[in-house]
Image (cartoon, rainbow, N blue to C red):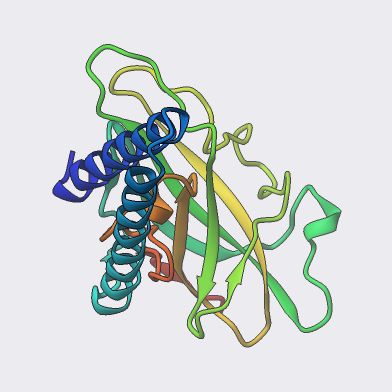
Length: 212
């Protein structure tokens, strides 16, 4: 657990204490005390918001090279590569005129020693060299591939598996990397988090196999 996580937990505890104190003061008819506590809560919330936004703008974006593992607690993810797909089983993801389908391959793993786990809210977007992001094509995978695995599949202790994600991009665009989402809350309100409000999320670069 990082310092940012601890500060967030301490802030949540402080807000709860202030809210309870305001409610108790109001019930007991201590309106002046309740107003003072409410002003204190408002000031703290404003300062926290300023700090959250300021750090988001100042803190540089994080980059992970292809093959470099990023772990969120005991759940880990790393990108391997991306290539242009010749054909897909899902016709809805076939490239239209002026577009191509890229298939990104990544690995999901667990560094847990005993427990089984899954990231139910994990999802990935592809970002191109211009910063535009794309959602994966649902259910699409290269022909002849192993039965598809999902980012949210369960993992045993020390287990790993590969996932293939297909994305349709314009003809003149190439993948830069994947942006991994692991639930918006509480990361969006943690100061200094890769997922914090207005901060550019970490980019996991892809090794490209370009079409000839």
